Every structure is written in C-alpha cells, then in structure tokens.
Length: 313
Image (tube, rainbow, N blue to C red; front, top):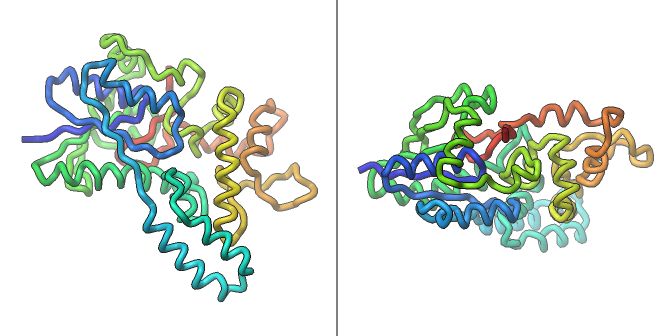
C-alpha cells in the first residue's frame, strides 16, 4: 500500500496541499524541516496546524552537522598552520567548530560561508537530506512512498518546467497536486476549511520560509528590518561568527557585493547592516539594484519544492 507524505513549510501552498490530502480521505504523514532560520510565527503555525484542521500533527526534522564540524575542525588544525595562518586565528576558528544547536549556523560554519543563489546548498542540506534520511528512508522500508509537494507553475518559470509526477532519487515518487492552481484556488481551500493564512502574509511578507531568505527582494529585506529587527540582529551575529570561523575572516549573509559607498575601505563587501540601510532608500540608492533584481521569487533550487515563492496574493 502506498504511503503518503506531505511536506509542510508553513506557507500557503504547502498548507493547501495538506488540506487537499485531508480532503482525499487517505491517511498521510506531514513533515516540516526546521532550518533554524525561521520566524516564530511560522513555527507556531506549523505546530498548531493539526489542531486547527483535524489533520495529522506535523513531524519536525532538523539537520545535524556535528560530524561535519568535527571533520572541518580537524582539517583546519592540520592544514591552516601550513598555509601560514596565525595560530591565534586557527585556534579561534577551531573553537567555533562546536555544534551550536542551530542547523543553519552550524551548516555555515562547517562550509565556511553562507549559501548563495549560485550555491544554494541550504535547501538540500537543511531540508531535503533530513526529510529523506529521517522520514522517507524509513518509510520506504514499509512500502512505496508518494511525496505531495506544494509547487505551482505560476510561481516561476523554473517551477513551470517541473513535471506533475516524477521519481525521486530516494526511491519515492513525487507528486505536485496543485501544479496548475491559481493563487485564488490556494486561498479558496484555506477558506473552505476555515484556516487562516500564516500571519506573516498579512504583515506584508512575500515568503514565510527562512527569515530572511537569501533570495529575498529589496522590499522584503526592508520589511523584515522594520518589523522584525531581532532577525537582522541574529544575522549580524552569524556573520561575525562565520567570519571568525573561516580563514578569509570575512562572511556576508547575502552574496558578496562590493560596497561602492565605503571610500575608507575600497573593495570591502557589504554585510547585512549596510544592505538593510540601502533597502530603506528609494530609486536614488541604486548601488545594489542589479544584485537584488536577481533575487526573484521562486528562487528555490529544490526539486522537492521545500521553499515557497513570493506570490502571496
């Protein structure tokens, strides 16, 4: 008998798929991958989804990078001194290679950098792999698995090219049941079940997965900074930690873009505070426009659609 698994992100489309699975009458499991970079409203929304719908409780998985951190710590202690890196730098970086308990930060420390649009390893490492190893793999021992995904073609050209069905490398089958749905249909199924949308949408957020997401737009970064400054504070702390944990002594949450406004340090890269200040400017502050123009909605690289786009209706 086929086992059904719904991936839940706390966003509109995955919630619609969860509700559709309930309407099908089939028994199913639901899973949420906690990246450690989510908003408190999203955690609460996912945690209470079963109470509000009568469906199954959403299981939570988290990636563990203990082994990766230890392996990289051994490497830097062995190799960095050979490269002429000062012992104080080596020891400081080594001390930071202990698990923090936050998957996102641990991943970035072990990689020595933050993910980017061109190297979007966050989705695979923080969502796909934990779900596959901790949930899908064990399920497959008991028979076929069908994963229900909240992907809509209308979100992006990349998603429009994805199939309705396909085999996944894990051995499961993947189904995108709302592939042809409009945003109105997504909200209609919420209304049909009397389910309110994630509150972050009504606060002006275009996406609710990761806060902030490396693919966020200029306007989204501005909204996050204004409404949730503590999340910017957290990213600022993470930038300092990841910078101290790599031999370049530099790390930027967003892909490194040269700051042409800093005449005292030409060629330096902009960190989160600089970009937040720029996000508050109008069309006159165009230094980073080309960079942020590339951060379109639906930038998720996951073939499992484990992050949501910026179409919130």
